[in-house]
Image (cartoon, rainbow, N blue to C red; front, side):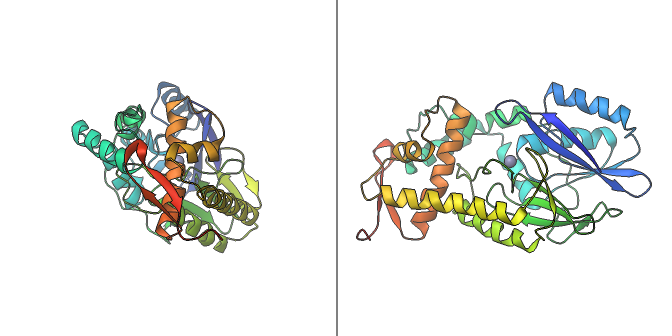
Amino acid sequence: MLWARLPVPGALGHVNVWLLPDADQGWWLADSGMAMPAVEAAWTHLAGSLDLRGRLHGILVTHHHPDHIGLAAALGQRFGVPVRCSAGTFDATVRALRSEPEAALADFAAWALANGLSPDDGLSELMTGRSYRRMISGVPAPADPLAEGDVVALASGWTVSLHQGHAPGHACFHNADAGLLISGDQVLPTISPNVSLYPGHHDADPLGQYLQSLRALRRIPDTVTVLPAHGRPFRGLHARLDALAAEHEGRLRAIEAALLRPHSLEEVVALLFRVRLTDALNRMLAIGETLAHLCHLELAGRIRRAGTGPAQRWSRNGRPA
Ligand SMILES: [Zn+2]
């Protein structure tokens, strides 16, 4: 197989994409990079040097975030090949590209008030999908959706598993014979994948789902080499799954301890992230991640909220232990 590292703006810097061998010296591509000129130029170069025309059999997409699905629609068209993703990924892409800006703004305002933010908060540009549209080449033409247990790129044989928590229907690809796992963003070697609650999210408890997915991934042998979307391939899958779960459990305990005294959302964000978040994207990620932890505890009946907008306060249920 082949590994290409494509540019992504911001702190991440890059995304890894993979070419999986198929029959007749063909390839399946797993993830595509963001729709931006530097990545388009990289694909023009790769298509020529790898002689991909006529040999690219299809494109797999792990999830709907723009550094993964970004160029999939354009490359699918250019090479005349199917783009396969889960139904969850397809629906999330369509939702994020939803074209009525007024409805999206109204949804954001209601969501902001219900979750302790001001509706005129500077996050509406990011949270209503306006910036998403600039980073992807469109919705891929509908193709056979990826389902749990499917085997793709038949000549090399990768088994699909679907996961929730980071993104709806995030696909991972496991090659048992080769001992390889393409983990996308679901498991990353050095950073904790973002697990967030945002407007229009149809999942009430993404953190609960993410923790469940970490348990499900333990079915994959610890001996695999993990091929993540960001960072370098690594060994030690099970230890990494344990470390990611422990990091979230630690945050949940820290929030519960702090909420003996009522806190606003912004106060909990400051408690968890400890840095001043001046960049809108980082602020959105921190707020979404904090809300995912708060809602997980709220659904478990461990904490509650009172009030709306910036006046909202979260506090612990019951008597202190
Ligand atoms: Zn992602």
